[in-house]
Length: 503
Ligand SMILES: Cc1cc2nc3c(=O)[nH]c(=O)nc-3n(C[C@H](O)[C@H](O)[C@H](O)COP(=O)(O)OP(=O)(O)OC[C@H]3O[C@@H](n4cnc5c(N)ncnc54)[C@H](O)[C@@H]3O)c2cc1C
Image 1 (cartoon, helix red, strand yellow):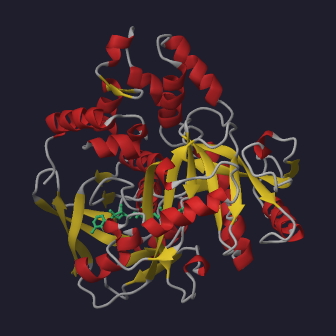
Image 2 (cartoon, rainbow, N blue to C red; image 1 turned 30 degrees about the horizontal axis):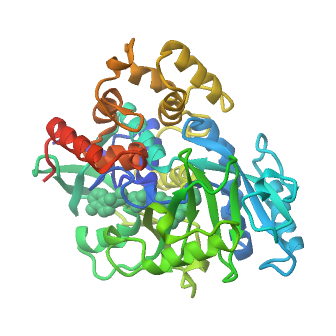
Image 3 (cartoon, protein in one colour; image 1 turned 90 degrees about the horizontal axis):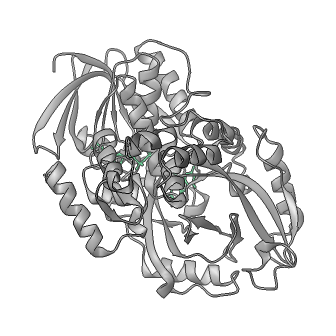
């Protein structure tokens, strides 16, 4: 390729895709490479909260908390299909981990630091009367209830990638950046494509290293530095069990070790419990939940729920690694959750922007800050534009989800409610395009199990870069929770037939 792009982004997690989208929308020519699948790194392994981070107030991270609180409603409006408000029940008891006055003060700040226009304020609950008390041990008499948001993290990433591509970005999924070298004031980047086994090269005026937990590996391995060390890798794991309660609110629990964890309604039939916090030294691709983490989460949740949570109740688990900026904090849970952007390259050197840390919640602001730095280095183009924008499928009001489901069902009356609801949650107004011209259930194509039909899988291959059963079952959807091993094998065979094997 002879053209020199303005910008090339390494990493298809939320930060890389968010930066590529923002840059493409401002008129920069942009490329992005993801070595595995979009969101296959940390960005599908989060607790999935769009939150200010109540806990970070204890660490005086006011800048981060305020920015994140402000972002909650901005992101909700930007993607009301994959993001929605969630109420959190925070039970407390006399002599508990934190006194009630401290929690009340934290929640007062949380409600008033900024940005809350639609989300309801904090209130107190009598757990003897409220439905939320039924699932808990009777020692919990009172609770606070406050607002934050929920996000389908992996879908938010792929929607950013799609929007970037719609705005002209060249998006390469399954393309590993194996080398990046400065040459005459530009970057020469070499990609290895897992779909073909071939390599290609691309040139860019500026490079963004948004490789998340691999950010130091990219600096050392891909760019040939010696011993770059900027991030502290902190593992966090989650377990999924059959649902422990019958309402739509989540729980915020405190553990005697001062840590907090959540129990969240998940995919209709399940409860998601997490997370843990422990330093991680291995390759991020090998991260798995440990037996010790399973015991920790089961024991911690059993302190609250009337019915204990046992390891044998676990139907699925996942683990990811936080790429936290290494600020020298002694405990993993105390390391800053804020992001740091660092430019390298003086004079005529082609510039490099390294992204360290960050949260799903602040990715849009992180991208705006990155674009300020990029503009300083290679020249400003369009102004900031993503606040008030919409991701693909999001062209409906924040309170319009029910109406979207009703419309979809009136267009396709044979769709079961649960199926229509899931399609609208995943694809918003694109749900109708997926079901397409189907007049009867048979037109949906092959049934793979759960509520997964061929028309959706075809959409995911054609529009969302899905190539393997895992992409479909665990990132573009969470239908993996509902398919039997035989059904998974059938889908794997189908994907290989349609997309070939990866190299
Ligand atoms: C347990 C846990 C819970 C969390 N909970 C929340 C939460 O509730 N709310 C919240 O806001 N945030 C949360 N976070 C934080 C959030 O998930 C992360 O900050 C965010 O996902 C990081 O995104 P990223 O794009 O920087 O990294 P990643 O998602 O890891 O993306 C980096 C990508 O770069 C790719 N890559 C690496 N090297 C190369 C290469 N050489 N060539 C091409 N591609 C490459 C990788 O494959 C990867 O996909 C949580 C994180 C963890 C671990």
